[in-house]
Image 1 (cartoon, one colour):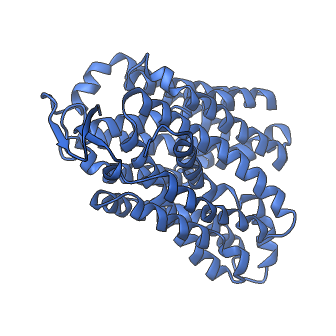
Image 2: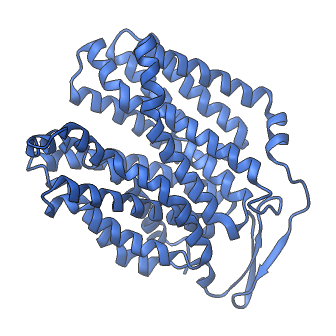
Image 3: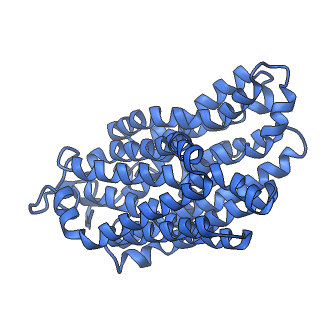
Length: 416
């Protein structure tokens, strides 16, 4: 199998887009769902739980998915996860009770954990160096564009009835034959004797513990703050400009679209800047965007702030994924990426609890102002104290340890 084939690359990108579909697809149908099940007590709570429940199960299932990935061929987890995704995700299409749909959404979360962890691990297995940076950027961009497409498609199908958006999840079943024909586990790539560096510094998971904690903490914090946008911007725009759902949706989609633009450019940016300076750029852009939102007096100015913050967030996933997969040994790569996935969705889950007390105490404007100031200070810290931060998290300093895995005849060196 040649990982540089267009067929293989396209399949990996399509599979990666499934992770974004999990939440965005049914968001437009929530009001219709609530009307359909209006006789149920506390129906508003249960309908919102349909949207958020997968995230909780992703948090719980991702470490298990990572462990299973490191135990054997990556496809043994990916393919069943895609099948489960299609069946569980489409549950609202043929189930008529909220309880049954919630059970399907819980299983969908388990499936997303398997897909997201498997797809990112396979990308790290197939590509290294600049090629990995470039493809991780493509992956993040495809996920961002996918969010816009699936949200739009879900809204269009919701016009036909509350159950129709659930049909989009069946697309995962169509991708199963693609995955089986285009992908293989890394140990089954024919004709190659791979010399694999166990990370840039020969690190095991224990050796990389400080770095992993740092990456997980940064990703968790970034997701907590970034999710202030979908959670609070609709209310902010309604108060500021009397904006309805359509204008609010366009504003949020703009941030996602701008994130896709910088994700596509990550490979070029990474060739010129190190991981920490890129983090400084990320939080500098996000902080500037949030302060712009806080100081805005009109809808267009809020759009400008959202665009700038989206440009920053678009670099977060590829930067942290490339750093993690470069430094951690391939033998524990699945578990490391499983932890990364947990940090992402735990941040999403915690965001409402972190932001709402600030809104209640200081107001929506100050929520974005406080977040913006904190992120700008963090950006300065990554630039000013770059050496000190690197010294504290990169705790193992020794010559690379090289493992040789014999597969067939010819040999090649894959740098972590």
